[in-house]
Length: 368
Image (cartoon, rainbow, N blue to C red; front, side, top):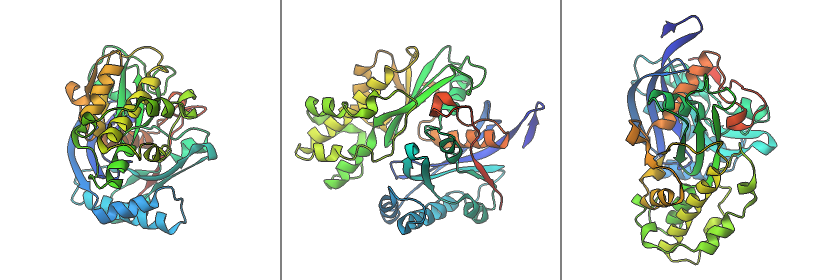
């Protein structure tokens, strides 16, 4: 840890992310003061076992105090402690935990995993519980990566506004202007969840015994899209709401029933088309067209999703690797960046990213 100017300090932080796909834990080390990306360190991935994933899936939709939520928390903490084993020269861990339930309209969100226990297990300082303060002040508590997207746009020296599209279980879109002085400034970022992305496809694949996901989009690319289903899905009230707005992973779980009678390939193709149409609808909310859309998350490897996006959007669409970023670890890096902001007393969300009334600094700090 070293000083930088008279206001912020630079830290080496390991960000940790366990996303809505429930596949495993990403760890990424970032050198940052929470304003700029100053360097990248090692990355690690620790997959969840079949048994661990089943425990996490059983906990989806539960709240603290539910035995299923407590069982999921123990899995999350043990697996995170394992992926952090042997980390050296780290100032802190940025620990997101596993989202089990998200209901900002009722003023609550639940990420399984206790930072106090993780600090004791790893001997590292832990910055965690990033969403509660935002939700407590009337924000959506999501998405939280946009401030990091702003820093990424500056890191790659983008010449003007661009968009980051994360295709995880849920899709989320960030429009960001790297010319803004800070990510919390008005007009610097607009972000929101676009709609379902990989979650319905993954759940359909598992329900039909076809595997955990549609690798490469191979199944979807063989299928025929049922346009009436796509049109009906986009009629959901969520899509007419103005951003910022956010979703729970299972808010569109009924899509599985809608495609239940379709052949496998047609079901995969139709669910992929819903995800693409949701992004296209979301693009209408952006303050101005971005120069390009940079895609991160597992969905960037789904050929059906990427082909659909390139056909539907009126700007270049490419994986973040095309500009020198790492799409496998971008979200983990984001929580390292946010942890540095917490440690330097900087906001972690703002009206344009979560709809909170004013910029707010989230996160709790636990020491071993």
